[in-house]
Image (cartoon, rainbow, N blue to C red; front, side, top):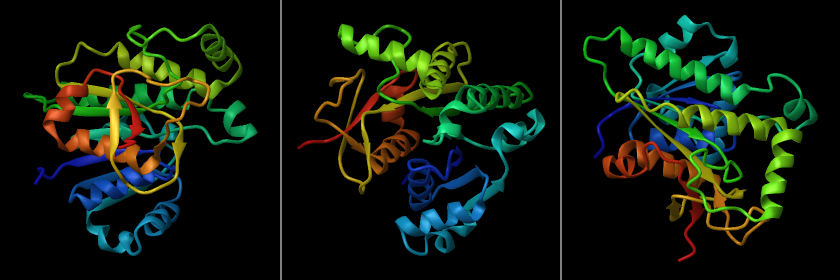
Length: 256
């Protein structure tokens, strides 16, 4: 059985974030969550697993707030005593969500959370190791250039997404920021890049070091529950974490 940890989950009411919260709780872990609506999170947990909000109430700490409205001191308090942080933040699929403010939601949240964790560590005589998982998308290229070269059409599509769709640009900038953070041995990270997301239950999944299908709708997909499972498995399984830390794995449902 994995040791009991405390994980901060942001974007916890999102379609994937709620699965991360529930799966951590089901595996006897403690969870902190920052959400705009506590009741919405509790309801979403019960929709996946009836009575989950009651069953796991003692292991779930919820703070109602807009993350970027919190002060730096608030974020330091929020991340203190946490072994890991998982960001499933994303923009709402609406005109306001895609083209309104905050346009750098994911990037700004990633930077501020990362800085808060490091600020806490700087005050500790012996800083404890922490983990940071950022959820991205398979459309975000690895900034280190290790992905296979996309076709001209795919690269042109990424160019259009980058300059016409602010949420995609936000995801790219957040990944680039994380990719550059290699100077702190006590704060390890991974950027999980799922392929086309679908709804569905937990099943087997596969992880790869780079995208394995076309940007234009390949025959592979992955359930949000499996994306959550991949992140929770990494947090709680040392060998998996050691395999994927400081990398940007892609996630797919297992076809076998």
